[in-house]
Structure formats: structure tokens, C-alpha cells
Length: 397
Image (cartoon, rainbow, N blue to C red; front, top):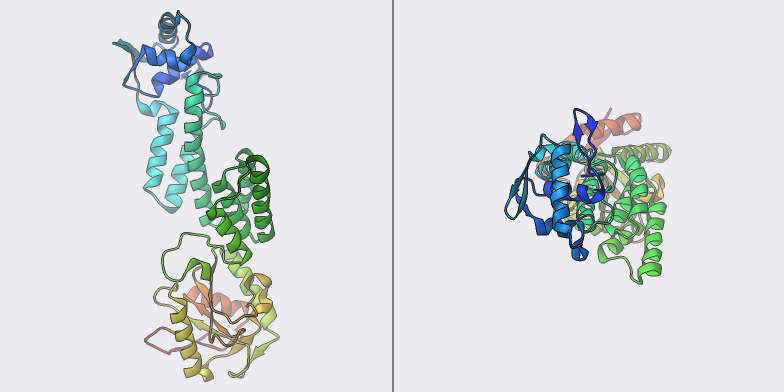
């Protein structure tokens, strides 16, 4: 049913007759184990324009289906017919079971279940061989919506796993078939942004905006406008907020590759501007933070980092000009009032609101700290742990 309405016997396709006869079978398969009245079957095949011989024609179609599919338990029950068949034998029901199971799962498990569910489809059009029967016109949009919802969730999970480039390709194809579906375009914009193609993400928004105005006389909804604004401000949320600082105040980059590239850029740019004097203006302190949640209130982070910078200045080496690491992570000309979150393991936090280029690179775990040490070729001799209960100095070399 998720494609042409077909049946197989030992791997060989069975001839099911004309669209009207296949429509009767589809109507029965949509409600396995339940009686479908003859009048309902008439409506499924002809709607309001049924011929005078419609009820007799239904009897003929059922008789032919019994001969074509002798293993099916298709019985007459007043006021119609009942098809007793295991739901697992029908692709539509297998699809729905897998989608329900995916709804209760997370991460890789959910993605695999959705992949299996979508594999039940044979093409994009359900009930493809039923022509323009009333049943096809009614059910196709419903099944199409179910497929699109499952596909969007699977793509979202792919993006969460860092598969942004693959998602971009798939979403470009999907938006061509869903030119007005804002949720699909939002996924494309997020995928482009996470893949480092922010200009294309903005262009995708303007393309949709122009299409909606030209074709429908409307404009993108509030959610898509908000996403567009966040991309312009480089504050794009890449996953749902789980509390803590306001999403609008955090730039989130979930791709580990992007984080690594940022660190490499920072390493190249900072090697020539390493400063050994703790009072150097526009300096950057590197501090590991191993315990607790990284996403705390931004005011709390500024207070903690600023206090540590002031209390242990002799134990920190500094690098200047974080803004040279690239425009995406540039510290703006106005006083910094936000925290930039990188991969939920690294964050830039301003040490003092009054110093626009001053801040701390806060690192949540030892693995990232070791990566930094390797990238900087051990040129940073020491860092300071800003865990609330200790000021332990950690050597990077």
C-alpha cells in the first residue's frame, strides 16, 4: 500500500485487476479484522457518483480477489466483508508500528527504527495504482503526512549525529517536492548553518519568503522568522533548549568537526600573539571546567570566571584576539553580554563586561583540554580549574 497496491505469492506478484478492484482490497486492508460495509466500499470506489450496478460490482470484485488471493481469509459478514490478515503482512501497519516504537526511543535506536519504517515505502506516493478513486484522494494525503513526519524526524536525528552534509543533500531534494512546507525549510536552514553554509541558509529563507508572497500572498510563520533572525545574529539553536541561559543568548554549534576547525584556527592565529603578562588588554584565559553543567546562567559564569581571573592571574597564560579566529565566532564591538557555546563542551565567556575582547575559553572535560594542548603544541603551560570548590592548577604540557 505504501506505493502501488500489490500482493505477492512466494515472491511473485499477483495480478489484482483494475484500479476499482484494487481499491476494494485497499479499503479492506486499511481495516484488517473489521467488517467493512458494502456501502463503504461503494463510496471508496465511486463516491457520490456510483452507478446503479455498484453493489453488484463490489460482489464481483470480492469474488475475483478471492480467486487471485486464495490464501487470504476474506469472508462475508453482514453488512459487508471482513479481511482477516495479520497486520504484520501489510506494509502500512508495519510502518506505523515501527514509527510508534521510534517515538518511544531516542538517538541511534530511534533513527534505526525510522530508517526501517521508511524502508517499507515503495516510492513517495501511496496507493499509487488506484487512480483517482475517492479512497485514494482521501487516504493519500494522510499517509503522505505520516511519511513526511517520520522522514523529518529521521533527518533531525541524522543532524543530531553530525550528518549535516548528507542532510543538506536530502533536504534540498525534499524542499523541491514540499515548496511551502516551513518545517522542511527550517530543517534545511539548520543543516546548512551547521555545515558552515550560513549564507546559503539565509538565501534559503529568502527564497521561501519570495515564493510564499508570490504564490500564496503570505509570509513565513513566526518560528521560521525567528530562526532566520537567529542565523543572522549567529545564535542558531541546533537542538531544543533544556533550560539555563536564554537560547537567544547562546550560539550553539553541535558539529564536533566545526569545533575542531575553530580550535585549529584559534591555534594558528594565537601562536603569534601569545601573551605572558596577565594584565595584557584583550586577553583570553583558558580554563578547564570538569564538573557540573556547562549551561549555567550567563551572569553566574561571568562572575565565576572573572573572580578566578582576578584571584589567580599568575597561574594563567593568555592568548589575545579571539575574534581573529573567524567571523563566525567574532567578539562584537559592543560590550559582550553573552556566552558562546561550542559543542556543549567548550564555551567562550567574557571575563568582564567592560572588556569587549576579554574572556575565558571554558572547557568541560579532559578530552577537549588534551585536544587543545595538542593543537597549541603545548605552548600554554598552565590552566586553572574553575570548579566552584577548588582553584587547582592543571598543567597542559
